[in-house]
Length: 388
Image (tube, rainbow, N blue to C red; front, side, top):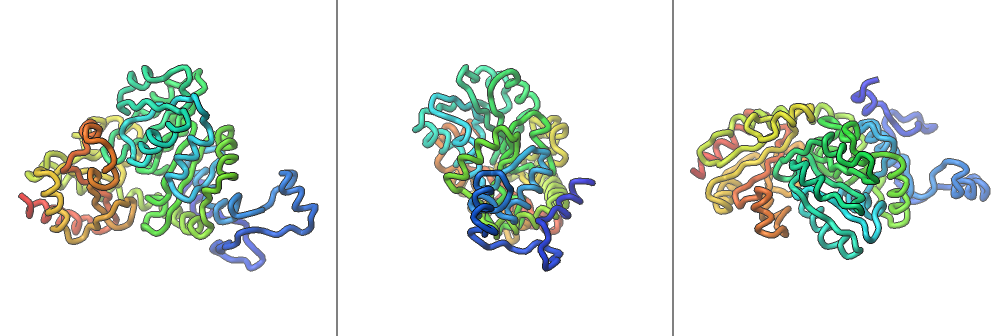
């Protein structure tokens, strides 16, 4: 059975009501037949639901689907993507351990690695993601964790995940990959040698900007440790959000195809415009890692960037001239969204770091939605023509 079919047909066990669509299990806890059953379930001698902080049928269904899509052994859902990223580190690392991470990360990830884990004696070395020699040189005897995004947010830098995974062979190191931009439809990092794959389910997994959520999928040996941390600290996903996310997965394949198709068409239409320094998109031949993108990703994804001449002043004018696209820090919605990373999602990053990452004052991240591509091209071309 193909994954698309499984994403639609996997469902929590049907109740006596014979429902076709899984019901919402909006309950904080579950009952036992008697005290002995309660004892046996708590002792893990018998399977069963206990408390929605630990498990819930809606959450379990969502996790089962994501584990299937990512070709993973196990998975655990979280209230947000950042909760998932933090749990992957807090659940596996201790004082004295060392992390190597790509320097092209979402702003909150950088804050965790520089301001939070550092307080616990966990050091982090940042390296240019595409430079495999830099990764290898940064690995120390106490390195326990490698972390990256591919494609990165917002610069769309790609990392050769198979080559990166090869660097940890023979070493007690976990490779965790943020797969948020690609989703398991475009790439499955575990198949390339990663140990953990992480998502902000708030983005493409939901697909309509409705709910928050996160998930980690990966090898059971690591998931067991992360589960212990999460079970006792409580960053759990709500049953309602899990229900929404599970239903959203039924159309993820179709949505990612359309997002990618629209993004490529828009990138090609805007490439070379006089108001722009650059259009960047993984499946544009001008992308510096175009060949890797074609090899590692099924499609190019739904994100492109525009580097607008004239800096922030022109970005403001461009945003005002757009008629269809929304202005928001989110992405992965059915509606096209633009974001100015330098002043929003990556505002806390030092100026010199922004320069190194290519986050200029004129950089605009475009999360291309599912609208008519002709309407999108007309809207963006009109706005760019207006600021020349």
